[in-house]
Image 1 (cartoon, rainbow over the protein chains, first blue to last red):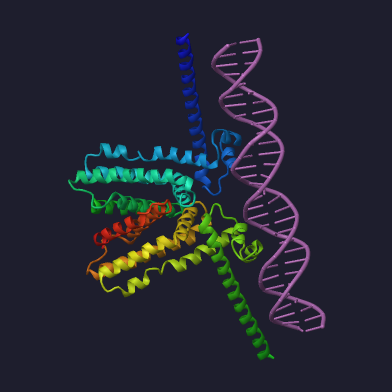
Image 2: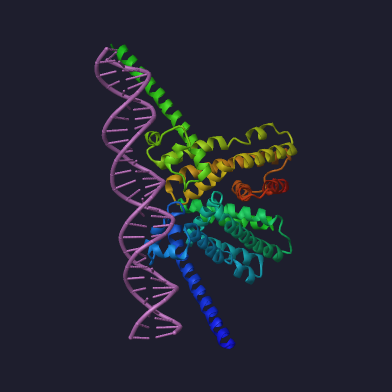
Length: 211
Length: 211
DNA sequence: TTTTTACCTTGACAAGTGTCAAGTTCCGGG
DNA sequence: CCCGGAACTTGACACTTGTCAAGGTAAAAA
């Protein structure tokens, strides 16, 4: 009888975990769909209904899976992060010379600026929103840290390949690259065809001087 | 008769100029009032009615002086710019040594971060909005250029006072300082008491290495 | 004084918003 | 097979939004 009870309890617990996994998987599905519209319209102009219309879901589902709009957006941001911070890891891991690392880094940089401009502008939008909306701050600060670490990994490896050490702090390096990227993104979105090339030139020139 | 006609025409022209001046003065008054609310709530959550309620005006006046919401916001941004880009001019003009320039610059930096945080976050908000809303781009890009020039004036003078030349491009320098400022602003708004001090330290350390 | 004009107020409208409760469908366990 | 609950849809709610037209007021022009 005790065994039966434990068995039943265990089965119930397992079932709950499975349900939770399904629940979370669905949340991510919905977040991914929401990211499409958010990237298109930005935080200010995106409504739950618009998100739903641009997806295979009805607007009610979003309320079923998220307690409110902020909850949804936060989930989107967190999901976005996971994809983002590993972008250059492979390049860092496989490059065997400074040139190789430089070219690999620049290639990825140009590609993501070209192909994922909408996701990047959404990130800058949300980071700005975090200055107004306290609910965003924790997630945004965490992502910012991860991005800083990502840049630091690249710079460290680059320095290492030249038997040097990075010349600035992680914060300054991140500020520099993030600032350049943000500027290039805005110019690129404004139709400036040379924006990406200029960013690459600038970074190529800068790398040897900061590491 | 001809004289009379010219006289009348002249008077009319003068009257029109006066009217235009009054009109523009009123627009700026309204824009200034709007900036209060925009700085408080951000672009996304600010409505014309809310702007009106937090001011001495009724919501109809805004529609009388601005063709639509974007027109109002653009006017706000342009007005904001004029105030912003001259912040460090006096320090640059009067400093007679590197130390003097550094301390003057850092003092202004700390003060504006402390006292005008709401205006600064609004700027970052609007710059992000420009990535979505084409109507903002022209003004935003222009302000960005002015800010870059502002930083460049500081760096040039700093280098000059040490008989050196700036070690990076205007774009890279602006990206660096803007990135650091943005990060410090976010941390400051998130309640990080050390954010401002850390920014000052970082800039103090950085200045001699980039100029 | 009368009339016109600029300036501003008020109230209304339609469209859109987040939220949620009431239903419907569907599937797994009994 | 059936039934209970999870998953989802639908429609409605209270509210806010940008926009604008109709009206009023006071100062300037005639």
